[in-house]
Amino acid sequence: MNQWEVFVMDMAELAEGKDLALSIRTLNPGRHKYTYKHVRCQVSTNLDKHPDRLQVRMGRGQLSAAKFSIQVIEEIRRLPPQYA
Amino acid sequence: MNSTQEHKHVSKISAPRSNREFIEACVQAGDAVRIKQEVDWENEAGAIVRRACELGAAAPFMERIKDYPGFSYFGAPLSTYRRMAISLGMDPASSLPEIGKEYLRRTNSEPIAPVTIDRKDAPCKENILMGADVDLCKLPVPLVHDGDGGRYVGTWHAVVTKHPVRGDVNWGMYRQMMFDSRTMSGAVFPFSDLGKQLSEYYLPRGLSCPFATAIGLSPLAAMAACAPSPIPEPELVGMLSGEPARLVKCETNDLEVPADAEIIIEGEICPDYKVEEGPFGEYTGYRTSPRDFRVTFRVNCITYRNNATMTISNMGVPQDEGQLLRSFSLGLELEKLLRSQGIPVTGVYMHPRSTHHMMIVGVKPTYSGIAQQIGQLAFGSKLGPWFHMVMVVDDQTDIYNWDEVYHAFCTRCHPENGIHIYRNTTGTPLYPFATPQERKYSIGSKVVFDCLWPVDWDKINDVPTLVSFKNVYPQDIQDRVLANWTAYGYPQVK
Image 1: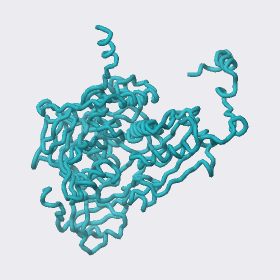
Image 2: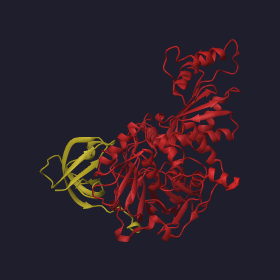
Image 3: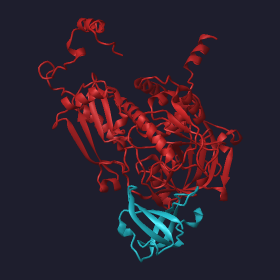
Image 4: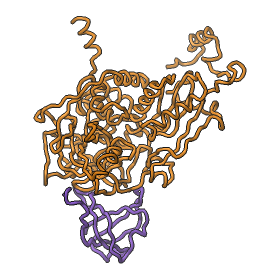
């Protein structure tokens, strides 16, 4: 199970049952902890619904008590090819 | 040795030439501690630095980092005036006015051009990562504060850029967050030198801007990168240290970087790609500026010294180098500006605890409106966005003594006639008091506190007399009381 974290200004940004485009960062231990990916995903407050876990921080870094499960559907490649 | 040689010898500056020499000088003076036990890059190192700042304690030199054998951290490099004095090659016990005087002496001297050395002689080229090997996670990038938007690569460093037409070289301390293995994002405000360079040239043309981030600089190179001086930073380093800065050409672009830096990150600023940055603990003592899509740096190459030391500044409540050094250099550069305009200032000081938001100016009040003139000059300069309060006191008030300044403010500043407010000026998103709208668009407002007696008051009948030991007693009485102080039964006053 992978652990992820997301920053939001409003919990409404984490609508359940919809495809979302989020920047999430890995909380998995190791040197790459806290690096980000842009992903298309679905989230749920039902922790059994999706395979990975997502924790939430608000705009000034406050950790939310809310917990989500998350399914990363695909990584979104926003980087223009000239920088790859 | 003849007298000329002797003079040269006496006047030679013996400042640390590298971060390593600086650490050693600090350890020798008792102003840095070697931490031998392993420290975690995730929060623990940041917490050590933060506590050292809040206690005014010795700088932590953390020799073993979890997951990163061979690397070390040096935190809070210039968060005390003692370490600032060491960085300038002065006695650590030097007073703040003495340090300020020396800074002004050196930065008013002739510019000293840098020298470019061969890459084989540059310590920062001992290890080179290119192509698929480039990975910021190979560096011990710390999570400085719990809850930050990311691990911050650049907290005490210089982002080197060059204007492609004018050739102006800029070293600026723009914070940089690691977004992924090859991407950083940073807060570059539109009124900053780099912000102007991007908006004037690169962004309209859709061109990427070459950059190099230098980490683990000599303390005077870091001081130059932090100072809001009009002198190009490579020359300013030479003036501060008394000898040419040693530069070396980058591997992947034409920029030149300090050869003795611990780590160099080369790349390009993307005109057409932005990722999120922040939140981050800031010099004001808060996380204020919102997380946003900001200037994005794509990394093409990393070079570093063997056993490289990453420098960490942990900004938060006072006092750290973000407040101390910035207050110091900002105040002195403003003093130069005011003197250049013929204002009869006796000094300018920004107390670090004001998080360089309040400029205290001592002046001979020789004509009406001088406080407002000072405020308008200071706020209208390129330094203006970084502070919003100017307090003007007379030349009899010790600007370094907060008790005297506070007394002057509370007793001489007329609540109607002495407070002058300027609206819709340039501000920063970092102001904690600013509204969300003001933060978003860098809108500011400013205030001048005029603590001078009005010049049209009769000096005999209208101006109150300051009732103090020094002001109301004849000199012979003062001398007698001072001479007999211990005889009266009081302990000696230091």
